[in-house]
Amino acid sequence: MELQDAIHQAVLGELQEHGYAALSMDGVASRAQTGKATLYRRWPSKLELVVDAFKHSAPDTKPPADSGDLREELLAVLRHEADSLDGASGAAARGLMAELVRTPELARVVRPFLADPFLAPMMEVLRRAAVRGEIPVAALTPRIAAVGPDIVRQHAMINGTPVPPEVLVEVVDDVVLPLLRGIGIART
Image (cartoon, rainbow, N blue to C red; front, side, top):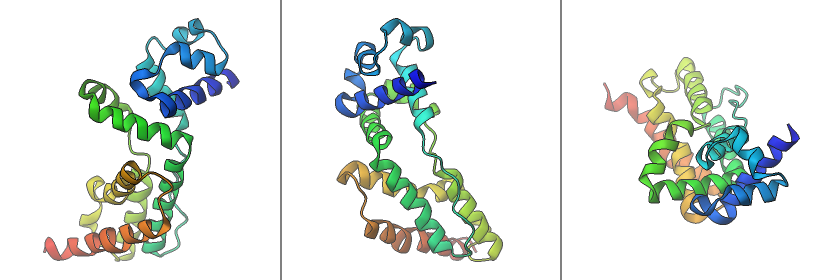
């Protein structure tokens, strides 16, 4: 398990420093202090190695405690996302996202393996709010739940990290809450 963790960290480091296009099995092996054959026995290609590294380094994304306060719970999820984007795996993820834009073939292959880890906690926060009657049940869709996390990711991609706390407050107060509250009006 130690070797596998070292390999995953090496992949993230190589992605952060060199990007996907320049990532090599030699570079990963050297950084992880192992042989290239060890990598190829488990991962036949660098794509499989990268996908596996991301799966194992994905942030633990449990919903925040049920406080009964929709705004605070939304902010808690977005703070967690912002913190994860600021770490090593976040930097590697930002590099890979940029590569996906440049390489449509890579995007087609990788996207199914790179699910948004913040979708489930957002859906749970929205579900709780709907049960309390704060938002309409119509707001319980993956697209609506993804709005806040998508904006935070976009901010990190364009402006870098860390994402300032005031940006998270703006996303919640100026975008997500008005969207959630307007759904009932728009769909009636």
